[in-house]
Image 1 (tube, rainbow, N blue to C red):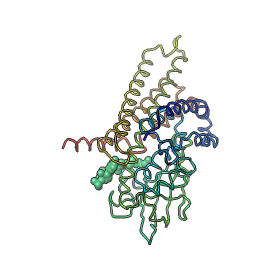
Image 2: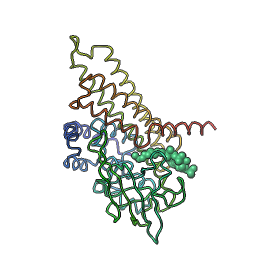
Image 3: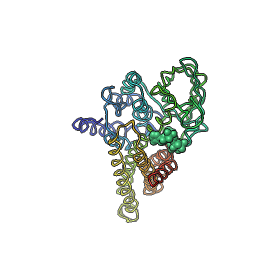
Image 4: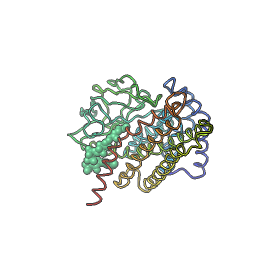
Length: 387
Ligand code: COS
């Protein structure tokens, strides 16, 4: 799957213009109001951003992974909450259906996801199951032709906006093999949302608990129709999501370097622009070198991703995805830290974008698998390959 080159060559500059003309000027509004303006969401729908990764046959744009990372890089160059409006539709919310769903599930759900009419959200994490996702406790017990769901999902991105969840629950015994993925409409009786979480950064991104009390979900809503496959679906979805996040991290590093360079050129101390001092140049140079290294890695892994069918897992590619997530999210953390340092005291004041980017990027090292989980995946795979 890929968008033809000619169309992609139009899409990318259009998106760059949209980011510069519409999103960057709205960054302060986003920070102050903790919300994305409704007219911007409408424009995103019109541009097809909700359907970037959904094939054209289901009404999406049908980008390849190599194309998607370029789009993610661009959208990473502004406040990350803008991406999160459509990020779960493009990624973790919808990809499980695309990869493992039945033809009926794809046909009934994906066109609404692609148009943005339906916001999808991914519900894996629980109060007692974060990194150890296979230990999740939410129960799904068969009752006739329905499953009855009980449990709590935590920190669910876009839950307050969601029309449906891709939700993992336990239909069988302990461990990964007992987990199934469900499509759960958010308006079913028994679903309650917790209070919107107050976060360190990424203002405008909405997360909260999703509480399920005797929620009756048709058995036909198990993704792929077969119970016990849900953990694998979740892991495949996360592989893809982690690469997307790696590209977003590179885009954000690019923006922070731009901000820091502009500041270094304008700010004068000791009678000249601070950018003329080599200690400032060293910080910019380290950031730039790390960004280019991370971006080269992301593009390489995206090509390998495109080299296999999206629903088929390749442990070597998964390991490389984890390398990208590990390196790029840690990299942007260092870049943001240097960005604040170049700004001096001004970098700690919230009228400069670098102050909020510093807070925003902290989440990248946590969600869709912490740095330590990426290390574990890489380490395990190296040992497997060696045996
Ligand atoms: N693609 C497809 N299948 C995968 C897979 C992948 N990337 N990773 C693991 N699997 C399969 C395994 O092959 C195994 O299948 P079999 O039982 O048939 O052998 C099954 O899934 C269980 O895998 P594993 O034994 O590796 O599970 P663990 O419990 O050890 O967990 C980690 C593995 C830690 C990697 C996983 O729980 C994880 O990624 N945790 C982080 C969760 C996360 O990112 N949360 C963020 C929430 S979304 S913001």
